[in-house]
Image 1 (tube, rainbow, N blue to C red):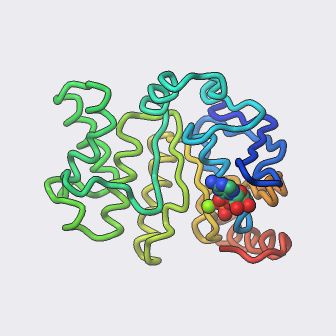
Image 2: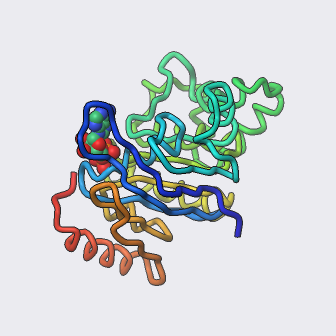
Length: 249
Ligand SMILES: Nc1ncnc2c1ncn2[C@@H]1O[C@H](COP(=O)(O)OP(=O)(O)O)[C@@H](O)[C@H]1O
Ligand SMILES: [Mg+2]
C-alpha cells in the first residue's frame, strides 16, 4: 500500500505558549483509507490537521504527503502543492456567497487554469456522486446547510486530490444532514478511492471511519481499526472516549 501522509515526530509549539500543542506525534495514512482523528478539546486535533494541510508550520519533525516533505517547501511550493494535492472541507462550509455552486465547485480547477470543457466534466461528475446536480445554478444562500456541505465536499474532490482533509465537517449540521454528508464521504472513499482524514469529536461521525487515531495532550493515545459493524465500532469508540476521561467539546 502507498503511504499518502506520513507524520513523523511532529512537534508544534505556539508562540507565547509554554507547553507544546503537539509532542513527537507520529502516524501515517495509506492510500484509500478513511481515517478519523479524535481527542479531548485542546488535545491538538486542529493543530495536527493545520500542519498537515500546510496552513500552519510544524516546529519540528517531518510531514510527507505523497512522499513530498512539506516541512521543507517554501511558500510558493506550498501553495502550489496545496492547490493540486489537497482537498479541504471546513465546518463552516467556506463557500463563496457570490459564486454559484457550480462556480464554487469549479474553483480548484479554475485556479489551475484547466479548460472549461474539462471543468464542466469534472463538476458534473462529482456533483452527481454528491447528489447536487440539480442545484448547480443556485447560490449558497439558496440551498440548505446539508446541500452546502455536499457542495463543499464536491469542491474538495473535483481536482482529484491525494487526500481530503476535513475538520469537524458535520459540526454545523443537524443529524439528518450530517448522515447524508457522511454517506457522501463514505461513497467518495469506497467508490472513488478517495483518501480522507477527518477530525471529529463526534463518535457517530467517527464510526464511518476505518481507523481512528486518538490523541491526548498532543500525543498519540490509542489507535483502533474497524473490524466489525459500524454500530459496534460506534460503541468501541465510546468506550475509548470514556477511558480518555476528559470531557469532549
Ligand atoms: N493559535 C494558537 N496560539 C496559541 N495556542 C494555541 C493556538 N491554537 C491552539 N492553541 C493551543 O494548542 C492546544 C491544541 O489546540 P487545538 O489543536 O485547537 O485542539 P483541538 O482542535 O483538539 O481542540 C490547546 O492547548 C490550544 O489552546
Ligand atoms: Mg479543533
